[in-house]
Length: 134
Image (cartoon, rainbow, N blue to C red; front, side, top):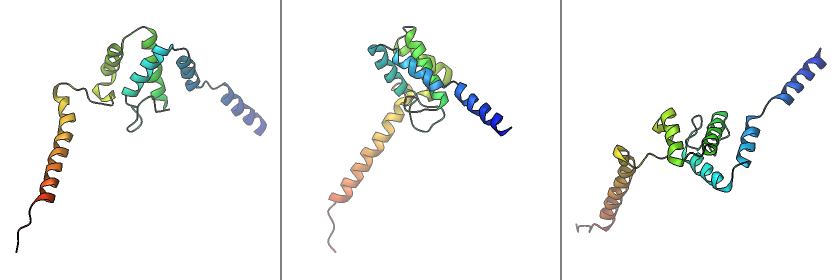
């Protein structure tokens, strides 16, 4: 009985398809220009299951599926804006690692710069302020 179970599990692991292997095969079939576009787009898309990394950096199954979809879009000769719009329509602006530099999203870029500038001015004022005599 134990031998039968061991053979069953060994066979099931042996026959299990590896989604990463299929993705690797897709990646190696891209031309140089397609590979550059693939890398650029997959670096701009956020991993839905990980924290703070792109789908290119992630090995999660969901990220592998997204990377495979990127390759499919590239093979259909779609341009970068079309591919990005494809993912924005499905996942929303959240899928982008950087907020777009348009509309109210400019605040995400300007507010930190404003705080750092004001903080720098405050520190400079504090350091260079003449101390009064007692």
